[in-house]
Length: 407
Ligand SMILES: NC(=O)c1ccc[n+]([C@@H]2O[C@H](COP(=O)([O-])OP(=O)(O)OC[C@H]3O[C@@H](n4cnc5c(N)ncnc54)[C@H](OP(=O)(O)O)[C@@H]3O)[C@@H](O)[C@H]2O)c1
Image (cartoon, rainbow, N blue to C red; front, top):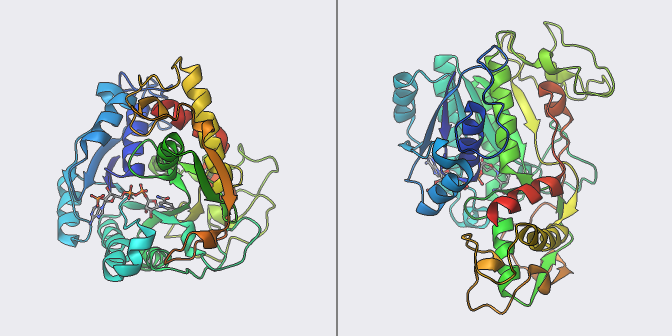
C-alpha cells in the first residue's frame, strides 16, 4: 500500500515517520517493532511518502534521528495541499492508495485573525485530498479535533454523533473540513483528537518543560478538562487503521470481538461496522458514512485514556520530568541533555528541578484569549477501539514515554 502523508513535518507527521520506521523494522529505531515479522495479510507492506509545504526544521530532523536512528525517513516531498492539481499529480506518479492528512492550520488564536487562510487549509484542502482519493478509489485518513464540539456544556465523554457548536474559527473550519470530506464521498476515516503533544514542534509538554525549568512559579487553568494525546500513540493507531484498510476482508470484523469485554453483534453486509457500540445499541448509527461495501469509513475519536485538567497535566509533566531525568542518571542541573527546554540544559538557570517551580491552579478568565476553549473535551473512544481492536494507553504512561525521549 502506497501512503502519502501530508503535513509530514508537523507533530503527527513526524510521529508517523517514527511509527512507520518501527513497523518496517528499521535498524536503530527505538521500541519493539512488529517489524521483523514476515509480510503477510496481517502485516502488509507499506511505502510511505512524507510531504509538506515547507522543508523540515533542523531541530525536527535531529529529533527524528535521535528517536529513529538511520532507519527513519527524514525526506520531505514538497506538496501544498491547497493545490488540487499538485495532489492529483503526486497521487498518479506514486500510485497512492491512501492519504493521511496531518496538515492543518493549527494555531487556534491566530485563526481568529486569519479566517480565510484557516478555511483554506482546514476545509478546502481536505476537500482537495478527498477529491483526489475519490477519483483514484483510495482512502483518506483525515485528522480533526475536539474543538468541533466547542460550546456544548457536556460533562460526559463526547461520542461521534453528538452535535457540536464550535466557538472559534479553528473549530468551525475543522468542522467544515469534516463535512467537505464526507460530502465528497471518498473512502474516509476522520479521526477527532485532542490535546496533542509529542517530541516535535510546539506543544504543551515542551512549553511546560521550558517554563517549569525557568520560572519559580506558574499558574495553569484547572477549569478546562480533557485528555492528552501522545502523537506517537495516534500514529500507531493510524497504522492499525491502514492495515485494516489494506486487508482483503476490509478489516474491522477481524478485530471486532476480541477487543471488547461484552460481545457485540458482528456487522452484516448492510450494517456498517461502526453502527454497533459495546452495548449493541444503535446510538452510533446516525452517521451514514458507509461507502459501498466499505466497512471502515466514518468518524472516530482518539485520545489517550483518562481525564485531567491542564493544571493536572502540567503538574504531571513537571514531576515526571524530574523522575525520568533522575532515572536516566542525570544530575539535576548538570546540563548533560541535548533537549532544548529540559531543566538539564538550562545553563545559567538557578532552577535545578522542575518540581521546584510552584504550579498553581487558576481559572480560564485569568488568561484572556480571543477564543473560548472547550471546558470539557473528553472524547468517547468506544467506536475506534471496537472497530480496530485498539488498546489505548493511559495518559500518564504515554507522557512518561514521551518525556523519556525528551530527556
Ligand atoms: N495540536 C493539537 O493540540 C491538536 C489537537 C486536536 C487536533 N489536532 C489536529 O491534529 C492534526 C495534526 O496536528 P499537529 O499538531 O501535528 O499539526 P502541526 O504540528 O501544526 O503540523 C501541521 C503541518 O501542516 C503543514 N502545512 C501547513 N500548510 C500546509 C499546506 N498548505 N500544505 C501542506 N502542509 C501544510 C505545516 O507546515 P508549516 O508549519 O511549515 O506551516 C505543518 O508541518 C491537525 O489536523 C490538527 O488540527 C491537533
